[in-house]
Image (cartoon, rainbow, N blue to C red; front, side, top):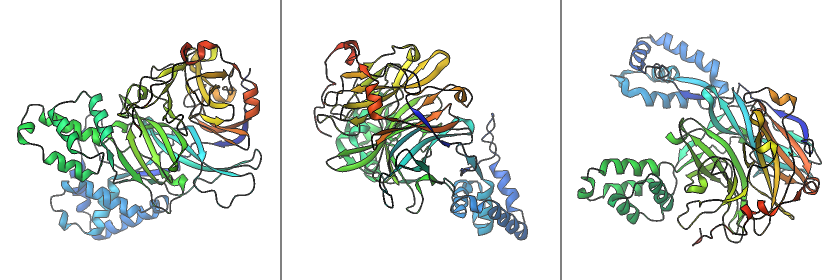
Length: 508
């Protein structure tokens, strides 16, 4: 089987350096030897006369105002972040304060370095379409200076037939704003277990918290801790662990009048300070109705962690950590519905094998059951998923990736039993999509990689990153793909067993 089974379409998304956000800039903090120069800069700004101050501010708004939304509000915010360095802040005029904010700001091109690793789901807005059309939301890993990744979006319309039209992505970008969130006690407990923080203080806090709680309740419980617990030598460190673990869950929201392609999910916690990578979106459906879910890799510059994301409308997003051995390493992908009452996910906990995992009663993702190990020449280094399983009448279609010689990434496929997905019933004997000559050059050469596709009108639509330089789209009829598969050998059915992943002991 060659890589020609999937047909590449002629629509391509390329990195656009005009897509910029405004970030805080503190002079000196970008040097190898950090020595902030903020105070001296503010003094120099404060000594400008009113005419020069007004002229500089007008020039700044004329130059950058149309590139950003609410730029004056951003300048006010950045001024507030540094005003503690101003000896007589009250003496500064409103114009001077805005100018201080402007000097402590800079533009950052979110995808100037690379654009890659897309996933595709049905868009929440399906109005105004014709017969055979589907509006889709495409998530994108966008990479800027310093290899800093964030999550962006594009909107496209599929059909009729094999037509694909991507909506223009122009307009000012908006970074999500933190919003209140209802924390989960079980996730706090699982996080404390992972950092081996189990003592009288954590037990007291967990016992006092309800199953769902807000930030005010959390701080009130900490404030009511008995002094004889806080006075222990481990007291201060335990409080830090509690706050750090609790802060891993947060919510971010966007203004209702922003288009999807203008929204940027930007790192908001220390664990993701160096990037939010490879979001795998899926439209999850259960008795409560559809909701968008995703997993992504949080990276702090040294360690990785798996995060889950949920949204009803792709405007408000709630982020929570995923805990347990099944959520270690990259590449967790959620199933689009429960199977036999179980929430399931694909994973690659050992770094090289596709596994199946589900959460236990404490919502810790359990040790995975192996599904597929590196076997063929094009995947001998490692295998993993390319997004959430896609439900078909024949079974769960799993797009895979494999890594071969010269770290060359290609995309393949497996078929899992619809009712017992721990059983691999068929596999594609070769690659579905492989790098071609054009994919030899790029930010990461010799790679085609996807974080998830979908089926529309019998056609598999596969968005993919090409050498992390651009995003392309490929299609293949589902019937053609299934016909090209061969029955899986018993050795590839859950590593030679008919075992099921451990069942949850209680409902979610």
